[in-house]
Length: 99
Ligand code: SF4
Image 1 (cartoon, rainbow, N blue to C red):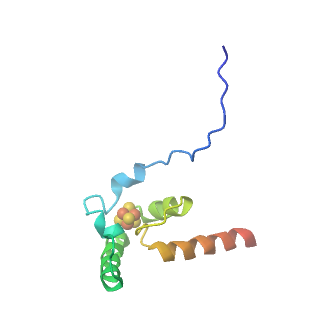
Image 2: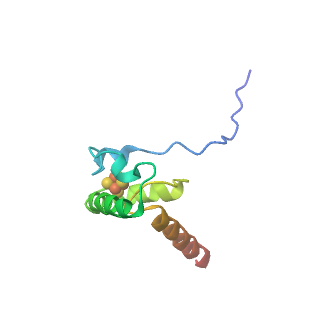
């Protein structure tokens, strides 16, 4: 019996190798995602701390590109929060459309 390859409906498995060099490797996940019910002032403080970790991260661009290529709705990735990633996603789409 022959084996027929069917196109996969799932997204390709990401390469997580870049995470080995992540500056956040030993940080608490809650620093990047925040607790349920977090209020805005606490959120701003937490995000500032998370972004400070991202600022020195050697794989920041890999992380950001990964988050932008996926429906990552929550958390700080690549030094950007949810709203900032949405803005960056739109900026990149405009750039591609204009090319
Ligand atoms: S950019 Fe930030 S969230 Fe992404 S791997 Fe680096 S430290 Fe972690």
